[in-house]
Image (tube, rainbow over all chains, first blue to last red; front, side, top):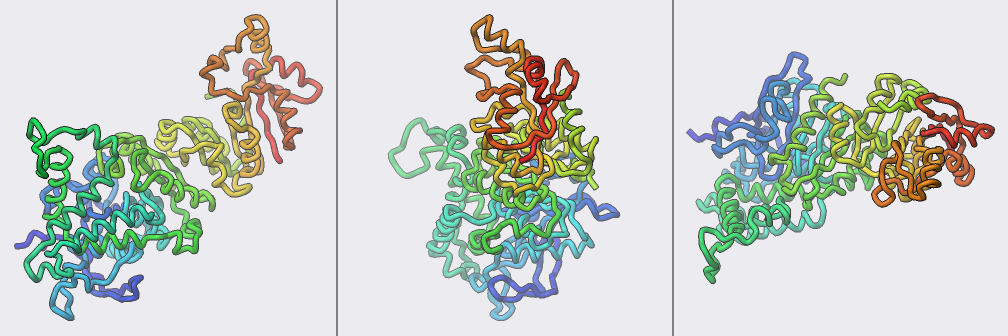
Length: 372
Length: 198
């Protein structure tokens, strides 16, 4: 039996009009939950995953057999305490862990969608996810939390459903994808589509995988998730299992070997077309433009209590972009807290063991849960 | 808890909206929340202290009053509190104007550089005063714009704001300051507490 058959899925019958103009219905949304929903149904936290994440937030990921992507933050007695809260996470549409995505079969052609899959946006992702709340009968989340692309979903969620979250924690994110970030995503997409195996997106019908292209995309992206200082401290110019340079193009340096490894393990767990679609969704994200240049208007109807978190060494979603969200919220007198956490670990800080971050997130959630 | 917190609290009406600029570890915020049931926000420059405030369930943003007050709309708070930090800003005039733009009223406290011990210290020793309330040396003090209570009165005329209430703190005793007792209050007060409005 395929391990993916065990993935929890709801079929969303209701039709969803996508931003690209197409309408989808009867589509699968894969999810996972942790902890239990209380009687009042007021202890639910929706966790939104980032570009290459999935619904398996914590514990053992049954598909990859590795720890969930947010194991540091989510679990019993952790920042998002599953003894207290009911954690829900959905695989984003366009993804490759069970939700409706480009690797699914197109009923019209009986082939996989590939690039025939409709372009999706963060708005579409969030509009698909909200069906899970209805599925569990949750009127109002205690919190919606996410980092990076997950943070964009948090912002979009509160904007689309101002009454459905008591608190919101956008972490290391932005309200409008920057030129630099679009550039990095384009680099990744170009690497994938330049791989001959990609075959205009029809690689799986040819039993091929654009491994090289996807690995290069991952390697380039991975660099952007770290910081110069972090890289220097971890790797410096250390050599990889050799005493001297080999005067060739093999991986002489540990950093090269590390990146190659990151690329190769990524290919095993991620679909190349999903990578194209999800990076596109990030690039199209511009909540400022959606509200005609005034981000405050995105949140004007909401009483949600926000807590924005950024990291000192994050140059992909730098503090200023996070602060812009805070400024927009303060401009309408919204309830917003903000802190920039000191860390050398770059954008990835939110996924790693950064005690100040983990503790502050826990304190915010636990204190806010006690408030009426 | 600092002795002036009770005095600040007495100046604030219940159920009002308050911004504490330089809220430190949130002690005053908690006190005002309990005592006056205010809707209160804080702004604090130190990351550690912001994290402490968050752990107390307070809504605080990390920021610097000189740059970050501009995000708040005009008169979006009933009171803006600035406790003992006016002297640390590069541009106190800008800060006062910002406080009074964002708040309908502002409460400002200043350590009084006109206190007799400070004056005596300078006169006798001939070096920059180091006292209990001003423990730093001239080269490492954050207080780059020290002023006296009298200076603050003059300041109100120069940059045109009204002082509604001014209190002197002398050995934990509170008294009113007015034009007729200004000379003595300026000599004996450790701290001046002012309720001001544009």
